[in-house]
Length: 291
Image (cartoon, rainbow, N blue to C red; front, side, top):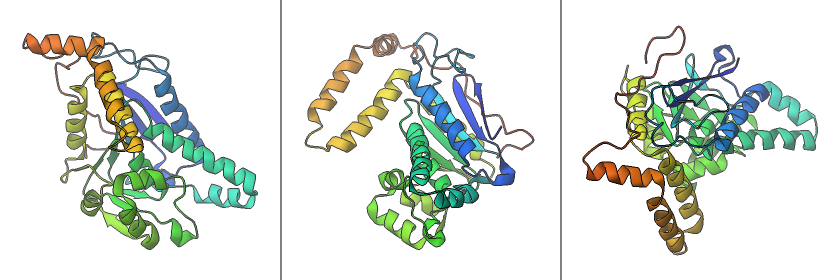
């Protein structure tokens, strides 16, 4: 399978597993990722009393996980579009070409709009659509060997469906630099540009991912999804227009069972009911050492 999924406690781990193809975004990979993240959006969140359980029902058809880790095997995170399929689509005519582009865009948006926080673990190259896939995630954790490049213009192309994701992270001026020059940036520069949220030291990538996930697991599962929606709405509405929306959201949040349970626990000097008893650990990919 080019894309695998399994859960570790309340966290879903999605693994791109075609290292011989450098994790290219073939039609099969795009379809699998779109199906997985669309399925997550349709699920109900875990209630507070189940959220701290070691093995909650978060498999297909079950509840939403509390976080998603997106990773890949081998030395490349994702090499971007499958160039053979892209060339074939270009020769097939405008309608077929548009259909393929729309399917790719729908996959990126399913990742970006997922009601569960998505953490990208980037250990190597993220090129073209692969860099766009990382940009679609909520938090990007990169190791020292991570490299980012929007190489489309050097192939006579444009970074079409990923452009809103990248501009959201970097702003227009920095995206202009990256898109027009198609230069490769290392993990440290990618962090300065906004493409990376956490830099991991050598040998510490998995530990850095685990630290991010541990922080997410301390938050209410419903509140995380609500915070993602709030961020999207505020960005769309702008400061002046968002005042009433923001007031509405906090008023709604206060009355949820999740918030009431957390406030009662805080008053009693107890942890929130969904707080895990122990830290979360990411198992290495099959046959690989921890990074």
